[in-house]
Amino acid sequence: RAALPAELTAMQADLQDAMDHGALGLSSGVFYQEAYAADAQELVALAGVAARAGGVYATHIRDELDAILPALLEAAGTARQAGLPLVISHHKCAGPANWGRTRETLPLLEALARDQELGLDVYPYTAGSTVLRTDLVDGVIDILITGSVPHPEMAGRHLADIAREWGVTQQQACERLMPGGACYFQMHQDDVDRVVTHPLSMIGSDGLPHDERPHPRLWGAFPRVLSRYWRDTALLSLELAIHKMTGLSARRFRMSDRGELRVGAHADVVVLDPSRVRDRATFEQPEQFSEGIEQVWVNGVLSFVGGETQERARAGRFLSRSPS
Image (cartoon, rainbow, N blue to C red; front, side):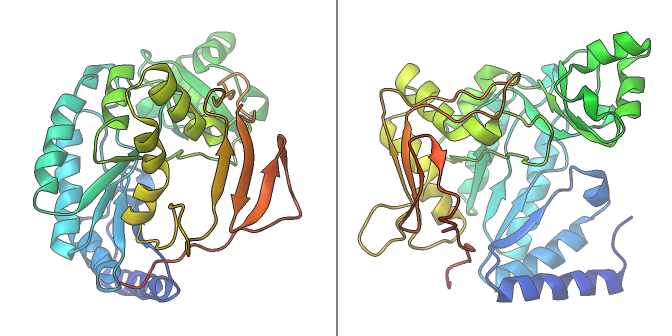
């Protein structure tokens, strides 16, 4: 159900407290059951709190399947009414019936961007990863289990194989495995390429570190952009590929002195070999360091070198919103 008035007031107070402590803005996940009932009034009321503090509104939209266009319009309307920038989280056109529809969604976003500030993020894979849900099991796409509370031994196995072994349908197997997580091979490579190379997009891993067998994007998303989209296919220049992973992200989320190599900026630096950089993480073996990453400096402290993390460095800091 949608929030009651008293509940909405409490959420606004919590959000205001977070914004006062430097939060970047409001993120919603109306795709998920827990938040799906949130109506436009509730979302605009909350986004308004973030707007008044100079924040942004990021959202995993309500539908990435057949109703993706209305879902994008809803997100844009929320941000426009509240008066703050919009970020569409990990934009995709999911499911074989929707393959190719980035030819519709990207022009729509371009048109919306003429009247309001918006952007989107994307990860460079044709599989997504989220919680196990029976409504995402269609018997057509491949589904790889990343974790299961009642059956942890099934992590890393394909749902179709588990269902066959148990003598049940894939939906019944999914129900037995819940709660849990999975990788859903539901996007087309051409759509992913269009989004990655679009001027409005930035790169995000959307990585989930708690899964037993995580999606390889957790370990390989950013080097994969450099190897696939710059070196191997030349769909992006090296400068633009890096910008989509650094400066553009910092600007979208209002973080000053981040994402740039210049005097006065925080020294977050990756030293890499452009001839060798590539991801090694796979769906079969996802927890693998990438090749060609020689050093990583976090806030001026050497934190990764020679293939090893410097565990005592602990140089990470809370990234707060810059004053508007």
